[in-house]
Length: 304
Image (cartoon, rainbow, N blue to C red; front, side, top):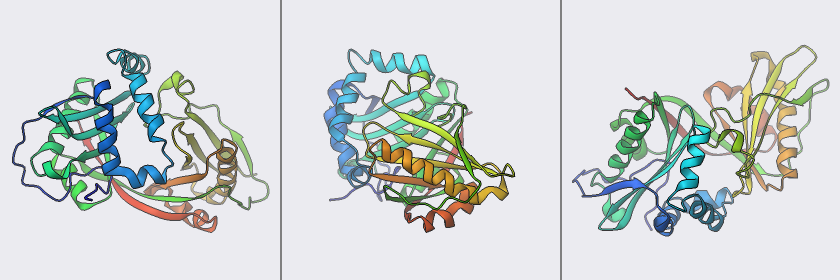
């Protein structure tokens, strides 16, 4: 079966013969078709992250009834963008795209049915997403791609490369040797700022668990991380941050604390995205048994 192989892809066909489609936000009656396309395009990734698809479908139906009022209320209260666009042809959902984020939203989860590719459906979804973001006053949007077709689509839409990410994963628990004299503490700062699942003061009510931790040595050298555990996934995430260039070794303490927290929450695995600015942490991560699973390029676009 022909599957999508990245977060952002239309497939190999690029004839762009227009197909008449209507694009709108996901409605409750379309949830089953959306889940079907989601599984066609991203089944392997959903399984890797331990996603409970039935629970995800239940949550979507809850947010979209009656008439999507809970979802609209959530976005208005938090300033968060959370919309799934669906492209329909003759009443059938033939393409999907998700837009998540707050200050700089991300486009992800683009999938178009194989038999309808090359007819401009994916581009129409992207253009509609950007139009909506611009209308909401956003100045920038981003997208992550892991294959050439996805990158081609993004660049045709006007995105340009801005970062590279390697995703490392391993099973929990993790045994990490912590350097002596390093102290780890929970930070008071807002932990999900800029994260796609940042829904402000309603984050905890949505079942999203998160915290921000900082590790410091006796000289004040420090690294930090945001820890995230989503309610419908059995895999947690550690998002690292280097606060001082000479602080790399303190990250072992951050890693140990973060993995312990996720284990106590019942997560089975942990993922760790490494960007260009945190590449110096890769050696510590590999020594802790993490394996690089995939890589992707992040692209951005200014919304003028």
